Image 1: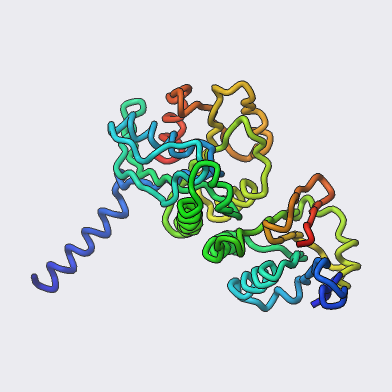
Image 2: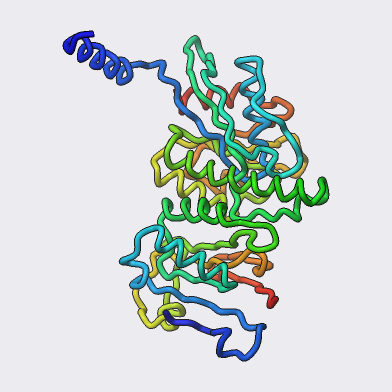
Length: 133
Length: 212
């Protein structure tokens, strides 16, 4: 899996790991495999970026499974933002980063709610402020 | 009972189900926390049955389990529409027990957050499996363009469920129904105040038209 940064390589606890997950990696996965991969990453404090996003049914199950895993002082849920296809006007940045350059039907950013202080989007930008704790 | 009689009864039951015009539609009331879902559910239930469904509160996640009121008969223009209302917890992607601690002790806050998470999971399950239509309630004094709203409307659309958007709290000065209409132009938006009972005639007309 391509990674923009890796906490193991940054010599300290302050780094934030970003997992950029290609559509190819998601293609062969069952719904629960995708959700498990996303939530395992988020539980570790990572920001997960999906090149292809999730289907509405998968989004519904992601919320349901997230709810079942929330526990006091450990994990209080996720922040999530998505660009639908019609809003994904420029795929070149992620395409270059991920090395696929293919079409992006959907771009989804998911992170731990207790670490992402703000996650919002405007017409062309998803913006996240991530705390380093 | 003989085999022939059993078969005849079975066919009769299936035929009744297929052709019954009075089969109640199960309508889920969805939306973000504090949009006024329970206030609306109670208003509808009281108006047509005399009983409320649940407790209303300004504290988020007061409704922590889906609650159903069956057999609500709404009369419009001499025609009766029968629906079962399912009042669901506000859907969210995060629940932090510390947000409840302004109003309660830590143990109670933790218990409430656990119940809230179970309720949201249950609401998502209902949406996938058990509702025939959706009333999506939004607080018209709050920006409707949030990821949860967009995601939930997308999930509802993907299931081809009929959906009505209710722009609640029009009694508030900051209310903007147009903001909701602009956010979800593909759906009918009905303004109302569930608390004050404003515009309920149009609400019931719309329910009868969409879910009857």
